[in-house]
Amino acid sequence: MRYLLLSLLVLISTHASARLQVGITLHPYYSYVSHILGDRGDVLPLVEAGFNPHNYQLSPADIERLNSLDALVVNGIGHDLFATNTVDRLQPDNLTVIYANKDVPLIGHDEKVNPHSFVSIDAGIRQVYTIAKALGELDPDNKTYFLKNALAYAKTLRALKTPVQQALLDKDVSNLRIASTHGAYAYLLQEFGLTVSAVIEPAHGVSPTASQLEDTIDTIRKQNIDVLFTELNMENRYVDLIERETGIKVYYFSHMTHGDYSKDQVEREMGNNLAKLAEALQ
Amino acid sequence: MPSSEIEVILPANGRGETRNFLLICAAIIATAMTLLSLIQKADGQTVPELPTSLSNMATQISNAIEEITLLEEAGMLSEPYQLGDLPLPALNGQRFQQQEERCFTLLQGQYLFIIERHDDTWDAHWAVTDQPADCHAPLTWHSLNQ
Image (cartoon, rainbow over all chains, first blue to last red):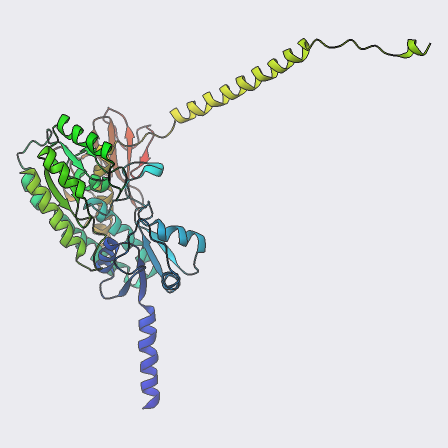
């Protein structure tokens, strides 16, 4: 009996250790990887929620976590330099780094690549497929399961586009002039044939100076910009001033890198973003 | 006597040195300008980029390639391939055309997108041209994420 129990324990622990341990650097990748792995692996955020990805430095505890992973999914094009720089330097043994944007046709080039491909449906789906294929190579027994989950998730994400597609039906938006506080929404807007006429923040999270703000207000007036998309969860007091001075309509989009990690964050917050976009297009 | 053994060297007026110095400067400047023009020429010949307005189209095609591969692996798609069976995107009302059994193309302005089936994989590329062409046209083909 004792041997039977011991064998059972060994079997359970072997099974547990066989589950893929996949780290992620940013919130959207938590959602992507959770959907792909289903119940056949664990998703582990490299950094606890609440950090600022633009200026974070990995702590010893984060690096310890890094060493326990089978794979780390990274944005890899500039939004998680805090992780990619360290991984490049340390090159941990047995860690497979999955560059989610490997196959994404990116906006911008060289050092000016726009890293916000996760604030998008199509570029998000492209990343889901890349991650699923890479995880399938790491765990060939579950390859079909991961790809099937990726396909189902892509279908769910694509369905989020419906409100905007309906809002665009028989509507000419060629004259719609859009401004945004930073370049995070370029991928998303392009999916619907929309382009940003003016970007207000000099850099992400950096408020414009008084003279830059004056220029921005002037630009909005001169270019007859209709709507301004800005970021939820960021203190943008200057946006209120722009709204007061120009009468422009302001809509708040989620950047999806705040709050607790959750499997449904992308669906939920992109759903809200697209509902806002549909409202802006009315 | 001793004076006859002394070699008298006339003081240099500096003209020769100045000339040599200027010649060397001119040679350096000429070399630098040649190198710069070569670099600029090389820049001019860099790989063309897909315009930003088409990057989403490229992304959708890239996604379609994955989906077609999965459909085929699941036995839901097989030869002979029919355009209507493939989940291909459209842009501004324009749709892919089937050129051959294994070649599908979409001309969008000056950019031609192709999707083709090789022996064991599906692949997609784009090229700069304003003329319709098939997958074997002698064009410079680029990968979608280039």
